[in-house]
Length: 146
Image (cartoon, rainbow, N blue to C red):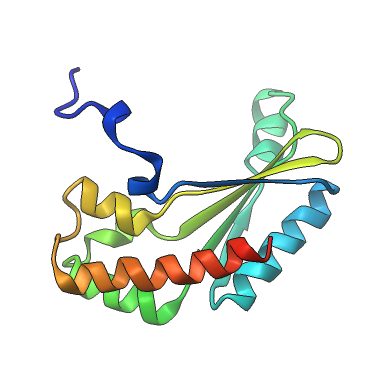
């Protein structure tokens, strides 16, 4: 299969890609990330540990890896309307925390709003640009407090 675009030409900024390293225990990092995203206006209605599931089901021997599914109801509602409901295929907005080694946690996020526009799931218009900008400001606030 050949992709219609070369993904390596898309700058991480255009995907809304963010990465941070925290020097703390894994559980402490998960709680910290949950707290800063909540303080920035996100709720976290979905969370799970793929590493626990994989370690149990297929004996994967993975280091701790945790997914926080963040969302802001107002922004989600606007995004659904502006994308003709398609953005729901990318809900929620995930923030990942994984442990490389004890005491070193990585936090990763990518903007589903920016990705939706890149892949044609959302329009490239002013209404969508406002959704991207406002969610981006919320993520920036959270990231500043990591």
